[in-house]
Length: 212
Image 1 (cartoon, rainbow, N blue to C red):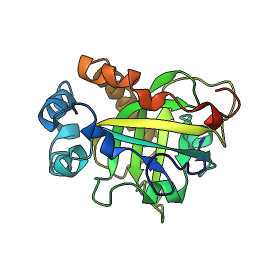
Image 2: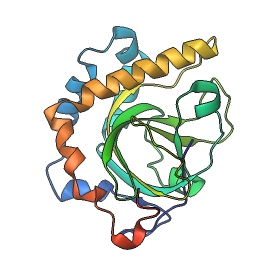
Image 3: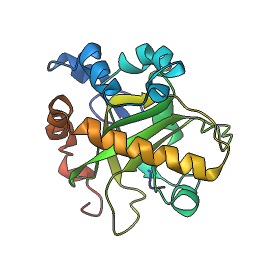
C-alpha cells in the first residue's frame, strides 16, 4: 500500500513513537476505551482470544507514531481493493515489544493534510504467512495518487480483534470491511474524536512532502 521511511522526532530512535505524550494530557482510561471497544461488536469479535489480548493491546493506547511511507507487499490495492500504507522495518521495530498483534483503529494524517479515520493491522497476516512483522494502515479516505515517501502520522486509539487466518480471500476481505465499519463507529465516539485534533498531527513545515 502506501508507506515510508522513519522520521526522527522529539525522542531518540529511528521513528517518533509518542507513548510519552500520555504524560502531557489526560489519557483515555483502558476502562473507557475497553467499554467503547466492545460496544456493538459481535461476541466472536471481542471474545475469546480477543479478550485475552486486550490487556497488552490497551496498556499502550493511545499510541502516537510517525514515519515515512514505504512500498509494501503490493497486495492491498491489487488483491484486496483496500490500499494500505506501510511503515519501514525500523518503525515497526520501534513499537512496544509486548503490544498485541491484531486489528486496531485510530486517526491518520499524511504530511500536514487532513486527519482521517483509519484501521490498522499489526502482525504477520496469517492468511499470507508473512515472515516479517508489519504495520499496515488503511486510511478511510480516497487519495488521488500514491504517497510513497510522505510522512504518515498515526494515533492508535483502540483494539478491534486479534489476527486470524481465513479460509478464502473473500472471507478475509469481508472481515476487513467489518473492521472498517467498526472503526468508523468507534471513532465517532466523543472520547475518540478529541484525538483527531491533537497537536501531534501538526507536522513541522520542513517535514511536509508534496503538500499532502
